Amino acid sequence: MPEGHSVHRIARQFDRNIVGRRVSASSPQGRFAEGAALLDGREAASVRAVGKQMFLEFDGDLWLRVHLGMYGAWDFAGEILVDPTIASANGRMGQTNQRGTDLAAASDSPVFDMAGENSLASIGAPRRARGRVRMSEQTRGLDEEDLADWPPPVVGQVRLRLLTDTTCADLRGPTACELQSPDQVQATIAKLGPDPLVDDPTAGEERFTAIVRRKPTPIGLLLMDQSVVSGIGNVYRAELLYRALLDPHTPGKLVPEGVVRDIWRDWVRLLRIGVQTGQMMTMDDLDAEAYRRAMAHRDDRHWVYHRAGLPCRVCGTEIVLEEMASRKLYWCPSCQK
Image (cartoon, rainbow, N blue to C red):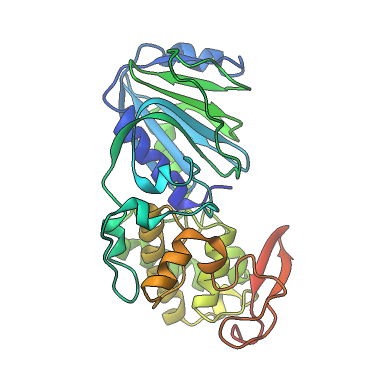
């Protein structure tokens, strides 16, 4: 399932390529035919991401709400404004971008500090290219196709197609795809926890801290609850808890207030890095070469996620994999006490 950085990046692609343009809307699959008919001919006015959901506004106070779920995807074709983090991964905007980003290709002279943070600016400015981009949680990229035909042929089960004069966006397999009024959008967002890129970070911190500190629920579950905090999924959950050296089973109300606040501030920082780089970069203080490896390979950018049975990078204890509410949880039983 897309984590927060992926959905914010998808929204950014809509802002660059669809917003401000009149669209032709259709539902090749047929399951969204009535909704597509209402969108057809309208201009996309704005877009926003909140947690794992995206809201696309059209003229006439009509909004499209999309939640990709586990298997949904947006495919873009035509004239597309992309950046190297998208191009190097064949457009895959997934939870870990397994193919990675080639920093050497992204910039002729990338500059790094020891934490690699200033490389966010050296990833490269957006460029307009004719091609195809897939934004999803899927590991398989798009096949090379002849893009001479316009509009591009429909391939597979497309729930919704949004088409401008130069850009095509195809939606496949979402969990939710519905039209909403402005009041319904606000009601949906009101049910979600704070998102550091939407809400005021200070106010979000206070809200997050207050919710966690009164709950008997394990912190490992609270971080996945979208009504507590928006955008965190399996990867960020495991990494945030490790970075806080916190046992995932600790009841929220027993987590010291300072630790809860540190988790929020860490989430603010990691989410911004994820949006800018396209990677869930969760390791700090890497030298330039280690940072390059981490940007290129998932195995080099996480403390515990997807490392079951491997030694902890700090203490050497075997990383544990267990299920928590039917989701995989990775953690170190020695460091996280």
